[in-house]
Length: 117
Image (cartoon, rainbow, N blue to C red; front, side, top):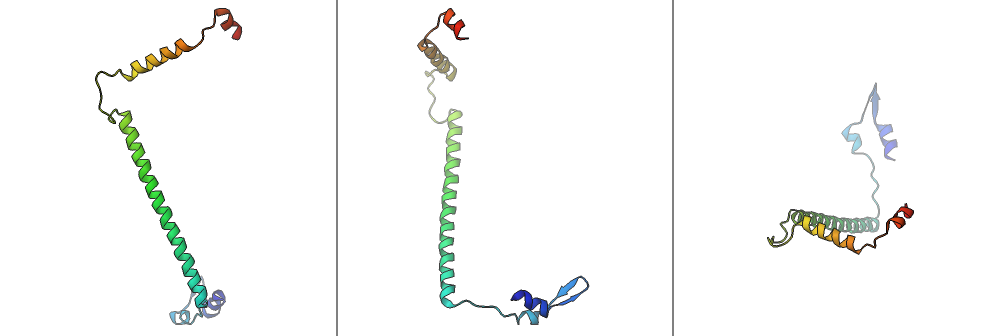
C-alpha cells in the first residue's frame, strides 16, 4: 500500500527521487482495532519483562564469574588464608605425595616389566 502511494505521488528526475512533505502527510496509515492494539501492547510488555529478567540474570552471572576469578587469583597468590610458617611448602607437599603414590604401586620384577613392553 505504501509503496504504491510513493510511486504514484513521488517525482523522479535523473538519479533523484523526491516527494514533498505535504504529499507524505496524505499517506493513509491503517490503524488496527483497539483490542488488537491492546493485545500487541500486552505481548510487548511481557517480552520486555522477560528481557529485563534475562539481563538481570546475565549481570548476576557476570558478577559471580568475576568474584570466582578474584577468589582463585587470591588463592593462587597465597592470599586467601593466613600463611603458617610451620606449614610445608607446595614443593615439599607434592614430593611427599609423589613418594606416597610410588610406595602404593605394586612393583613388577624385571622379567614382568620386560614382557609387558
